[in-house]
Length: 260
Length: 361
Image (cartoon, rainbow over all chains, first blue to last red; front, side, top):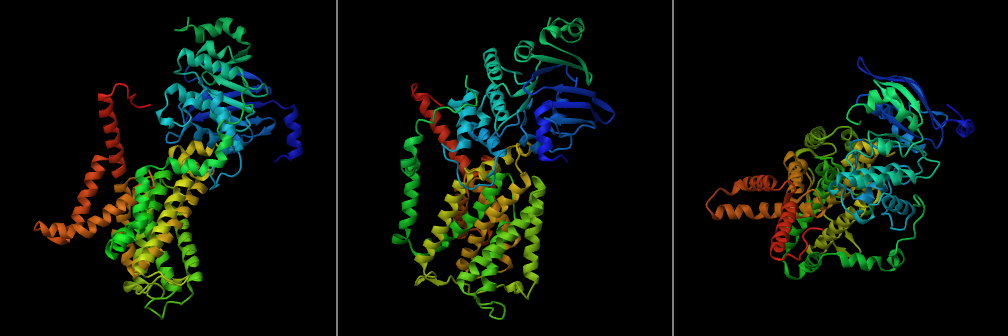
């Protein structure tokens, strides 16, 4: 266990995310094998790859939804390999889910409010939040940021798919995120909703870095400065968006099919 | 775009502080005001039978069912132990306070007896919850049913503390502030007060961080865990809160029936609480009270109705059972659900004639 001073020192110089030799097996199947990845603070990166390339498994290992079989993960210098998910959240790591994991019976604003409450104290409070309470205020700012203010009192189960995806993004932005994992945030969105999502992502404060898994290259390559290609659970190529786009191997492997 | 920046304070926030109570009162439906006025003025025109044996009993059972509704509706945990928690509170009032069994009852004054009874019952509810919360769905029902059955058999077989089969008789509310709370009208208002307090507190807490988190856990425990909530602790705390309501209701119940015995929390009454909550509707706190009133009316009058049509009066349980089946069959959300559907149906049929009505928002 590091002392607080050591951790602080490490945070100053360390990468936002330092993944070393991470593997994850499901039985005999290697969903991830020996993946290493470094991401600087504030860096924004896309992870591309076909279905089954191990992208979501990588996210699950980083977020703690399930631990890696081997390897280590450091978050701003701190070894979080064995931390439970909520400990990672408290350190500023966030993720969105491919399949929306929202609270269907609660309203939009209450969903975001719970996400804000989760990283602060008073989770057992019996006193109702006032409209002008700081947490309620930041919840309504987040709802506003993802353009859901007009429907903030509707139950989430009545929202459209695209609106639920936008709400997922708001949940990931709650508290004080330092790094966010976006798992296919644009999947199933209309073109208009896509450009809204791009606007939300590009207008995030500069210190917030993220990894985005995205099949839509138009979205992915516009919101990141670097790209990692994955294939069969391994890292296949890393580079700038334009390098990846023009790389012939990548084109054959990934862009070659229906994407033309 | 200034994401994460402070936006200007909400326009309404300034005036809100001054007229919050006014706004809240204005939102209450006129029909609800009618019910409030009716309940408060009931002693003016109702006899003691209607007052205590119908409305008093319904409100007490409603409170116990409300504690189940809080767990099941907001927390997704169907607990069959709530009636046992209530009965334990009644037992503790008999054991620490006064009863006909003077060799057991300790004769403590009411201000010592009542808090101790509530604390012990709440502890029992909390421990039951702690045992049950690691399971889901049908297994929660099985574990809480097992605890309730164990409580029933234990109280029936234990003579040193629980006085076995016969339990305790002549339990009476104490005289406080010079008012004899055994009299019908004061006792009615005592029940009405605690039923109203429980109801309003449940509504208030449902929108507090604790209540919202409980509903979040109901919808998606895994995500709540990931958001930094301690799901197990939250669930156990919900049992504690529900047990508090059940305990108060249990004390009222023992005064209502003048006695407490193993049969108070037998398997039948334990199931009845579930029936009341489901028949009324688990989605809102008013449901259990509606269910309790229907249950009490059926229990009280079905005997007369059955005999009037020439059937055996002892088959009143059949009426309750059939009513339960019919309501659950037609509306999974009980009478509340039927009401909501009827409202929706009326709104739709109005809109057919009124093209400017706008339909649902």
